[in-house]
Length: 639
Image (spheres, rainbow, N blue to C red):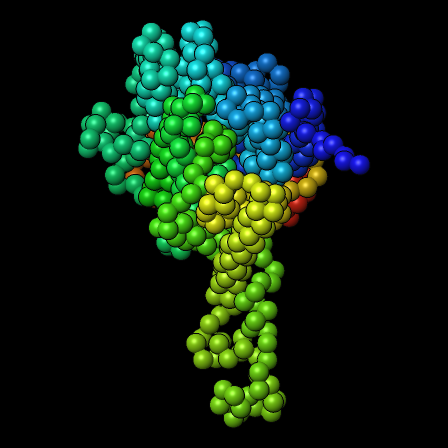
């Protein structure tokens, strides 16, 4: 008796159900990470500066105020959220949970529009099985905010049939996005050109008008301080007006690391590792370059070109900023969280139109890219590797006489020992090369599996008397498909998206930070001046009312300079050693995290304690349970 096969395409409720389960899986993890991740410098700065600005204690771009190093909405949005729901880390992170829901909904809508219900379901699950990306969107920083604004500006403008109202709101969102983070500026002109191309002159000029009016309004209102955001990237010699906000030439940034190229390659491949399916999906789509006629028949050609151009421009801009500016080389993996879902949309838009018959040189390029990616991902994951292929090979012992070793009492000698003695290779080299060679081996396995799959599929087609045309599908096509499938399977593991980030922690950070902050609020009287070295994040200060801070300390060493004129630095929200000494010797309270209580700072405080200029109060509870010496030591000045 012949049984009927189940056609899942016609079970309309199934993709909806699976999407809902994917949402549950995402938010189950996000809820845990929201409560566990240690706060970082950017998170504390956005939350605290934002609250200071919206409560009127300081103004954005105010001279001698906090370092306003970003566009205004990056501070005002978290500030007003706290004004409504109360200041604190919990408010900021719960807001990010709400934004994450909106982001996932937007990606689902776009994936469904461009590819169908099952692509939409896959988009939710790809986000749900990537722990690193969930963690990035759980912190109260601008990644989650920008991702939400970007995806909904695209929902309202991408594809034919958008109404004039949708295009207007989408253009408004895109403009506000750039007023939140200036690094998203390439999106505005590209979106305007796309709207003109896809929706016609009327819609295009409306979009341009909205973008210009919104941008101009903010620039007029915050002029000229808003130029601070541009002064970080544009040399004043090209625009002399920026020189007023540029860092003083005689001051040297304290945080100015010199990064070797091996670490720059490391950050590039680690970024691809954390966003693997999204980035490799886009790369694969460009390698096969889909058939234009088929894309046009499906009404997706213009969307494919726009999404590809937007992704490429944003990747280039952020890679340039991280690898050439030097201030944050390992920030690239976090920066791609602003927009990495664009790679998925490129894949969804083009996959049905991929070229399956490829000429020999296209195939050779694809094989090379697969092997380079596999080796590079292995290289980037060296910290999470235990033992790979190289380690297994080097643990093999061979007879001593085969290599001419005469010294020693044992008959066998270890290959690792031979290489260490003969070529002076150290353990660090093995740690780097082992995962890279293992990754390369995995790349070869992917090519082999694609080869076997092609043979099996050709055999089954021939057996059932199918047309010959599918037989011509290139091995490179199967290789790309297998690369993506293996990437999906490995995404939740430590080799890809399951790796650690710097802020992994345990316990309930909402409780521990609040307890530390509330203790400080009890022992510090109102209107007291505070010297802060209480940790990278100033989150505990959110729980203290009516205190006077030294604003440049919010950004810790990132706003600290060696040398320079103190008044000029202070005007820009920066500081140096002279200002540090001045504040250290004048503040009513010194708040020092235990791990920073060392060196010259410790000597100065101990001397002041001996002279009875300071007294030490009991320290706060630990700010986080996962890191030793996280309690804040409290010193009060005796007047």
